[in-house]
Image (cartoon, rainbow, N blue to C red):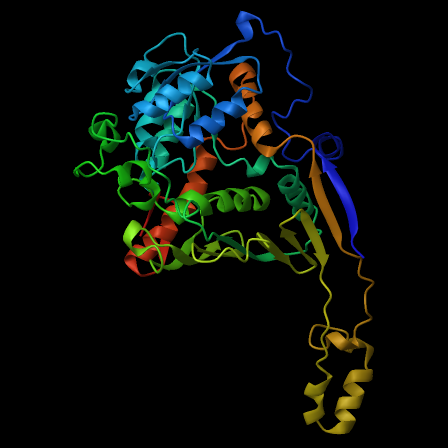
Length: 442
């Protein structure tokens, strides 16, 4: 029977120094002096932005003072959500021009992330950038440079590394509990219209309530389309689809637990099978990523079936496996192998002597080795604060005292690069390789 454990952030921090930067404990005071206040502007006010506002409300020192979006209905709702504290407008430049705003949350469509991020950082604003950090792999270097040059706090929006189970997995891998890790398997599957980004369109959507040209920005010019505006994840003009919206979370976690950066090569296949009339990005993808660190990753995902998510991710090592899904399960490796049948083709006297020889206890004859005692399974469940809460708190602490964040611009670039390489392989129908010297793919 598996041993069961509860993992709290406090217990984990007490027992491990791994991944604890910025994780100060204790509740925030209800009274905040003006000098401790952090004023935030929201660049993009869609559903994700509203969720982030609710997360930010848990921190009394945060005041949402501005929000911009190309749809007036979102701005009306944002004003209500912030109890009228947020001044609303369409153009993000009005936000970053304000001297009384300390930081911005960028939750605009992907094709706007680079411009919004670089302009905000150059205007002296700390930035929380929703994933993926970039729309293309080439954009990463510019955001990294802007963060470093302006010495500002950046946190990219994949909270996985701030989850206690992910930190526990990282600790176990670093301590060698899994042995040599050479394979990781993960899947992300959905089977609903909303899961496939077929979001409802508000009845008042029209060219009068949607600033279509503002939304397009640098994207190809097209006639007004409410489907493209409210379901932009479905279209290549604005999004990388499944890879950049979902796989990027998985890649962020994998890179963190394995201390990895960008794969050296990626081979992927993808196609559009079910949601044919609603998008031009694949709804089904299989990808293989090879890292220079000595391991490979298999990623799969479909919007045609919700099965497979219970396993989440499996990290396979020579001494054991870690399985994410309903907690974190460590499964020790139990090798059951007998190669004695190979010597059945030898002359009997030679075979008997070979097996009887103590020097034969090596890899060619696993069955001749003494059987090691294998520990039982271990299952870990989280308790305490959510990873999202800690992720935001880490960013706020970095704004206040200059501490590190786990997902700064460089880390965000590495995760996004994985997703961009998957899409490039699908588009080119070939393996793509990372050119680290010139910071681009072949």
